[in-house]
Image 1 (cartoon, rainbow, N blue to C red):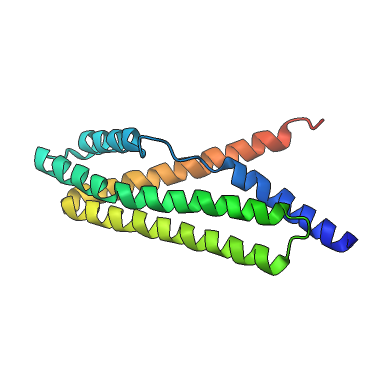
Image 2: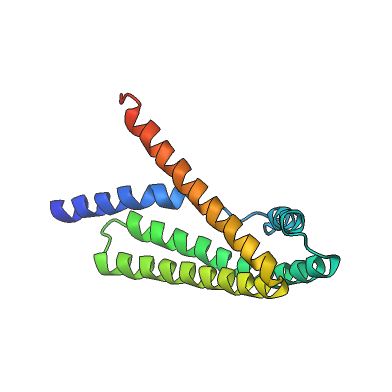
Length: 159
């Protein structure tokens, strides 16, 4: 009993922070963010009006799919939490529910991939190369920021 309680507590302690940090879906389906991204692409890549219209259509095409999968992920998070909070959580059941959530996240990433591929097909070779460079630069900046944040966190005094 004590071992089961310890394992359950450990699983809960590990799972709660990551589940709590997940963003909740909002009512505008991320439309504002999508609009900002399209505007940024238009400015940074020099999109034509036709390209901009096609990219907006692609984004709108994926809104329902993204909303659907995010809703499923949110529902699965609740199932995982309920499973973890049960009086006697079963390890196999917890694992099964976590795998379902992982599968949903893979589906979400594949939808994102499909949208990115379709968007990329609208761009010229030069625009794709420029976008690839910008994405790589952004990724490097994020890695640096994360490293800087970890260094600051390690140096801060602990209470």
